[in-house]
Length: 167
Image (tube, rainbow, N blue to C red; front, side, top):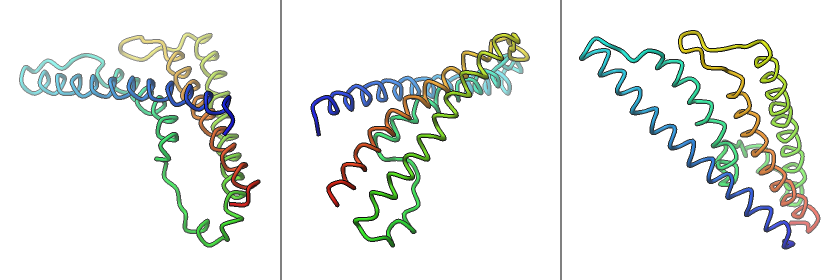
């Protein structure tokens, strides 16, 4: 692997790891928030206002900041039932095709998330009870998907090299 590609991989993996830690931290905060709301609701008859909205918005961070990290660890669900039936020399080509389709799909999601975020920002969309602007959370979706695309580009380069070398 060329030196620039290894540097690229290290940078993308580092950013993916940091984003994953942020997502995990937010998940931990969410656990305490939901527990505090449950205690407040059932013990003191005073729930925390807006916990449902806050947890919904936190889920955006938890899911989309972990996308790229999971990809870097090959942790996404795969169905190899069909792929395993092809000869070894054909598999990298199929993997290239699947990765290109994934890259296109996630790229469109990132692009449309930015456009929708701008639309929501212009419309002044906010959450119902707390009045939190929704548009920044769509930018988190776009960022997470973009980082995922960078991981997919790494994977595509790997499969192209495999196909070239006939492995």
